[in-house]
Each structure stands twice: as structure tokens, then as C-alpha cells.
Length: 471
Image 1 (spheres, helix red, strand yellow):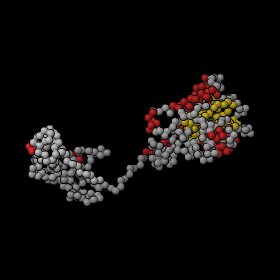
Image 2 (cartoon, one colour):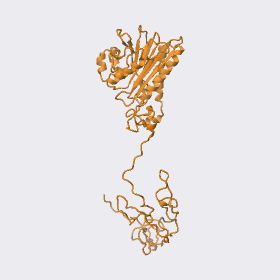
Image 3 (cartoon, rainbow, N blue to C red):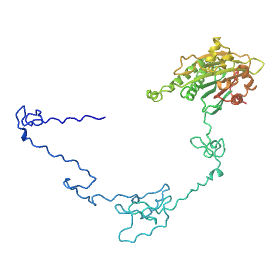
Image 4 (cartoon, helix red, strand yellow):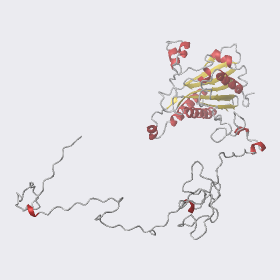
């Protein structure tokens, strides 16, 4: 906006510095004669340095000395090599001009005949330099040969034909290309299965299989299997299955840490004579501590990623001896008992820590209604630093007949929920061939849709003598 002009400042008396009015001849304070005050010096404006100096512009600046600084270096003054180690174009022996000299012809000598070369591709030649040779004082060369429109590809490596590659390093899709360090085929680009996408393991009489499923991008399940001997010499077999909570951070790490800790605890406690049910309780506590340790991170980590929560997983396990079957769990993974004589009734040996189980226990819904609800699989118990309270569940059973114990995540029992449905899909020879049976059960889940990771462990009951395994 417009502003009012400001009034000029009043003059001051040179003697007493009191202000005086315009037109006063004497100072009203000290009587100083104002007519003898000298006029202010003339203001000289700042001169620009872009135009020629005019008369009276001040100091005359000397002309620059051409010998004051050395001539600038040109790109062709310095030797170089390409990626193959050969000299760059025009930089063979003796082609490098000494520093401080022009790269053109030496005065007094016949000029070098121009190289045969056409105009610069994609544009008209500039400065009359169509014949090639060095450009005048620019250091740019125009004597390079024309580049082809297409470059020939490197010939294929003949070594695979003479020395077949390790089958483990071949692509599972095309079976021809090698797998690079990032897990992709160099031939077709297909991503290779990761180590935990499908895992099979057998330990004495117990076996387990874990698969990523058909919908998940990774396998967040984990398991541990083993066998040992009790102090009296009788055999014992064990299986631990953990399911990572997908809504938590690093669920795959949580399930792996929990299964390893629980399995190691059981293998250490049982040979010492610890009762299997007490050993199972200790194993679940150890698993919880291992998962809690994953949440111990620097304080700054939460500041950079405040949306992350503590790693978490569920756990279920079983220990079989010649006369005792012990189970333990926290969460919604399950243990089923399937007798070899299918005329005897099967049974589910665990109760879910879930919303659906609470509704059924409270009598508010039937089991069919509760598990049909979208909130059915919301768990109320898990392992993790943010769990409400650790409440390991353990139970002991003494079956009166031989059979198979199925330990699994909901990736399987979603497709065989009741004990009767599970009994129908478990092979008749499950106790004798646990690894084969685990594969069959995983295949059943995949055939049903494979919406989740699926992990299954199969143990025979009673525990067979040491050395007995899958047939």
C-alpha cells in the first residue's frame, strides 16, 4: 500500500548538538553562528564493473597479465583407460600433450591430416570441424568411429553344457538357469523358494512339515522336534509348533525363537528326570522369555517406527512316552488324538485361547456359531512382551490304545476342525509313518485353499523304542 513521505530530520547545532529550525541564523541554545557551517561533501555513487569507466570514474585498473596463470588443462592432457584397461581413444603412446600446451598442431609444423570421419551423429557439425582431428582449443575429439545401433550380446557360457551345475542351484521353475545370490533365476527371473517356505524334519519316531501356504508371502510358522531318553532308559519324543501372530512385528522371528527355546528346554529337562508335564510348563515359560527378548530394542527404534509392536506367537507342544501323553499350549494351535483303531473315538486335547472358545465356554454361542463368526480366530492368549499375562496350559493323558498325536496350527485345522474330521484325513498308518502322514496333512490344507501357513507334527503313541522311525 502507499505510505506517507517522512519529514527530513532537523539539523543540529555543530556546537551544542541542539536541534535548529530551518532558516535559523543562530543557535537558540548557545548562540552559535550557523552561517559558518560547511556544506556536506558531495556523494559519489558506486560504480558498476560491467561497463567502461567514464571520465572521473576513479582508479584505472591495469590490463590482465596473460602470463600470470598457467593455461588451463584440457581433458586430453591427462591419460586414461577404459574399463578394459586399454588407452582411451586418441591416447596411445605419445598422444598426450604436455601440460600447458595446446592440443592442436604445434606451431611451425605441418598440421596433421584430418582423420576420416563423418559428422557427429544426430546433428550438424559445428565450427567447420567436419573433418575430425582435434577441435580448436576445446580438447574435444571428433575422430571416434561411428557406434553401432546394436551391440552384440556376449556368447553364452559354455560351462553348464560341459559341467552340469549343482541341482540345488538350478531354478525350480525352468530347471535351466542358475540362482543368483538374491534368490532369483538368472534365466527366467523366477523367485526361488526361501528356506522356510517348506521345511521337513524327522527325529527318531517324530516328524514335522511346515509350508508357507498358497496365500501368504512368507512362512511365519516354526517347529522343533526331537527325541531323548528318560532316566529309567525309556524313550520320549517331543514336538513343538509355533504360529507367528501376523498383526505383530517380526512374527516369523517370534515363532522361530519360541520353538527353539521350548524344544531345547524339553531336551534338557526330560533326561534329568523332570516330570513331562512340569517340563512342558518350563518349556513354555522359556519360549515366552525368548519372544520377550525380541522386543528389547534401543529406545530410538520406537521413535523411528512407532507403529511397530512387540513380536508375538502362539505355541503348542506334545511329549509322548511309553505310557504318558502330555500336551501344553498358549493360543489357538491344537493337539489331536487319533487312535489307530478308527472305531474308537478321536479327541481334541487342547482348548483354544480365542474369542470363539470364550463364547462357547460362556454358553453364549454354540461351537458352530462361534467359529463361523469373523471374530472366531481373535486370540486371547499368546507369547510376547505385550501379552496380558502368561498362563501356560498343560494336561496329561494315558491313552489305553495305540494311536497318533497330531500337533498343528490353524492352517490345518481350519480344514479339519473337529476331531472326527481330523481323524478322516489322518492316514491309517500315521503312527508307523509320521513323516508321510505330515506331508499328507499339509497337502490336505493346500488342496483346501492354503489360506494360511500350515505346520503339522505327528508323533506315535506309545513312544517306540530308540531307533524306530518313519518307514
